[in-house]
Image (tube, rainbow over all chains, first blue to last red):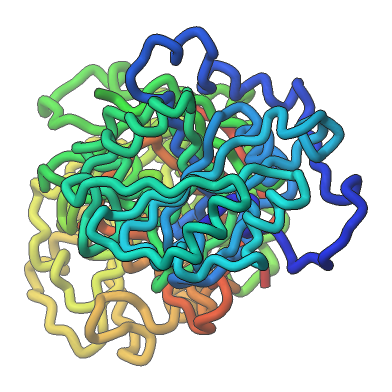
Length: 289
Length: 289
């Protein structure tokens, strides 16, 4: 679930941009600083700095059911999400979330490009992991991420598909027209069944090679659970979780990684910090090696 | 899972009581006060004040698997649990937890009876909901709650069983010898299948009739999920949840209530307060009607 879009009501096509602009004070942001990518640290690395972030209920659900947008966290958490986006070169989601939410995948924090700032300053590059091209095949001029790019309020997406997927030329042309990019990736890096990479390193290296030094990974459930697993946790630099004081109840889309060793927790976080934010709490931490 | 016992290593039979005594400063306790039973409010009520409390992982698991004690929360949270016990007349768990954990079900906070205080001052009455007498049938002089009572460090339990259950006379005599109490309750108040009451009101009224004005309900999973359901949430006055920064991973015992309305969250908390406590966070709130 895209943290920003779960808070959003359908919007009229034209709104004064001031109504859309969010602010998050530097005071509020202080607790996040040590969990964010620093320009210096990433420049010599082969992989981008990866921040994994999501909002869940007390019972670790990110939505009521697959494909359903669910309002979980409050307005302060929404502003924080957009602040976090401004601090990353890219934001990444899976195809299921892109299809379900039709998210804008931009940053609406006061002062970035399109929201008081020049050009696309501070606007992260959207990345959609779309192994079988299911989302790419639905792409039209009405797709929100393209509309947002056209309005100068965000960048067009990079889309990763499996290199044995057939993509209609018209969709690729549309994507290119808006400034987006399509990347074929070897099937060894993309799981056939679940739409989740079997090897995140391939995608992350590709992003680094395009000069994207940090990526904020926002969901959905399968993507998050994959990155919390023993296999992939090492590529994650920071984890930022918002918890809302609500129980969605059984049947939701759950964040809970697979457990390799039946008798041991999958992962414990270190350098943990908790911060109340409106009715919610935010946890920042790092995955123990 | 009993919040206290999950932190405990096996102990040598005799330990100076000072090593067992926990303290929780009045400063630390301040954030809890408005969620605790007040002597005045409960005295005119037919039902005791009910506090629901548990410790979970980020993925809402209270243990790695049924019957397995799991270290989740830190020492500060353990001290808080014992402080909370000192503020209630009774503490209640289900039979599965009693069998799995063999918990002491007493309060070890500095100043209560057995831990610096006189007699059993401040020691809550343990209550075990044991529909089919499975725990009662395992009761011996070595059962920890009875040993604790014998040592003058806690009270003997009240055990609720279904009135169509046959209980060996020797077990009832043992329980009585230690100052405990057995209560038969109508099958209409106890679910046959899951060991969870189908009607909590019967048990709670019985506790009130015995002068127990407040009860802290600690687990396990089935008991907690039952009390978070639409049907029973109205009997719960406060919810106090400790969340540890760990992912147990799939396969754990999960806190997540049933959802009656597929399209709506089961419960949203109000008057929410979050408080960091060591590496953990504590959420206090009330269930919305």
